[in-house]
Image (cartoon, rainbow, N blue to C red):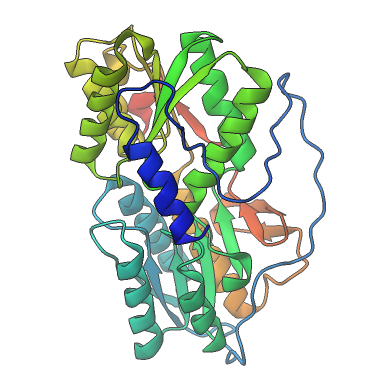
Length: 368
């Protein structure tokens, strides 16, 4: 989406004041939505031709040691610490990859672009990325492809022709259905809720939220979406935004959805400190360790997330296979090391698989 439009949407969201009828940002990313059936019936898969990019005059890297840099949205948080671990695990298992993770401590697209550009100049064979902005990052990734560098995304995509493959942790329609169904079960089909996301330009969350809006309108039309707020994947800001929502809407607010591994535990903390456990439900995506105290205390019933270690692992496997020529346009599946065979969807997306659901009964079995 154009930055001017994003700025307008952000201004509307932040200038909502105390009016409960303020405009709500619902993931408007200019793409069509396709909400799943309310009864859980599977959607029909539509074949899509390969739509990724291609490195220009890439050297023969088959079987040779390659130098790879992993550039996530930011470094220093549990989510990307664990994807980085997955990258390292795959590199060690493969034995022919020299991999490192590098990034800003803030989810800043300009910093991310500068960092990738510097690695293109200094020389690498492969780039892994999780995009802070799908459009803004595309030119520098295309520059990498033009330099013969293999490019694979994970977690948050860029424009398809700016990379070869994208490891998709979950389909947007699946995320939407899971979160909205869980929320409706907890707050009722006429409850009011708000969302804490990272930024309005973060591609995976914008897509998930757009599909959530479509699915909610289709399957739970009486639910009321109060507001969507940004929190930059920052713990303090996420807590403050959740606390502001609690104070702003009072008893009208029945649920908060966290769209990031930072926002969900921060929202749970805000609800706990406000004494609203049992009155305001927290539903969202999160790694298990930060959620353990809230799940064990009964303030949060469950949290959902794919294996972030597996996400980084699959991305590294895909890049190595791309460099070797064993993963190529037109393939329908991909053998990803210890993960086995993964499905390729939407032309150039590798689907990671089913997410894990963390509850009081199993959360101690996970450690990331």
